[in-house]
Structures are given as structure tokens and as C-alpha cells.
Length: 126
Figure 1 (tube, rainbow, N blue to C red):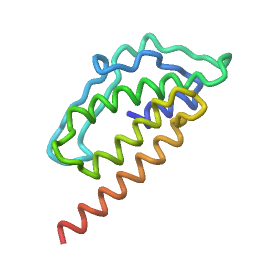
Figure 2 (figure 1 turned 60 degrees about the vertical axis):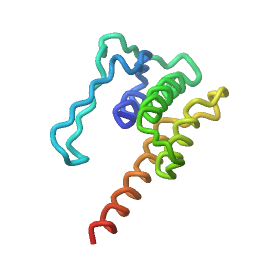
Figure 3 (figure 1 turned 180 degrees about the horizontal axis):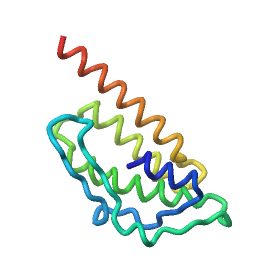
Figure 4 (figure 1 turned 90 degrees about the horizontal axis):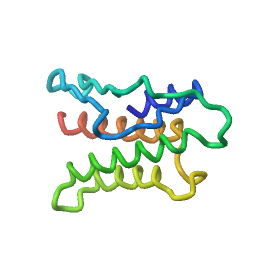
């Protein structure tokens, strides 16, 4: 989802309506790479180059969405796996928009987590 929003951001397009009720998640099978995520309500997005940091409002909305997912997944113990991601999502929610991630920074950090997860998974399977 972050990479799709990064693509929109690079095209100077603001989604402006990222919320849990417009995100559709399809699990095609048990493989991690077989989950499809779609944003509904795409007709309401708009291009903008006048505002100084327009993508930062979409970053904030993504952070809210991701933190809501985190709360659903959070276990009773202080799971380091989820805590690292929670910190990532909180960076999206900085009050000062200049302190928030850009979508480029966000996807870069998410990709680091994915590589780390794959490395851990590979170690556990051997």
C-alpha cells in the first residue's frame, strides 16, 4: 500500500481519503507475497503542486491506518517485531509535517523490515 501511495506521490497526486473503510485486502493463499491490497474511492484523488508538503497529509493518514492495523495485531506481550513497526507508524503521525516520513523514506524502511523478516524466516526454516 505504501508503494502505491509512493507512486501517486511521485506523480504529484494526493489521495486525500486514506481510511480503513476504503482499503480492500485480499488473501489469495497462505504465501506472504499473495496478498492483494486495493484502495477504493480512487475517483476522489486530485493532482496538486501548489501546497508545500501535500503528500505529508497522505503519510499521516497512512500512519493512522497502519497503527489501527497494528492495534489489531498487537499481542499481550511486548513483541519486538510489532514494537519496531509501531515506531515506524508513529513517525508518520508526527505533528510537525516536516518530521514525518516521505513515502520514499517510508517504503525504504518498510522494505528493510521485509528483508529482515525474510532473513529471520529463512533462518528458522534451516
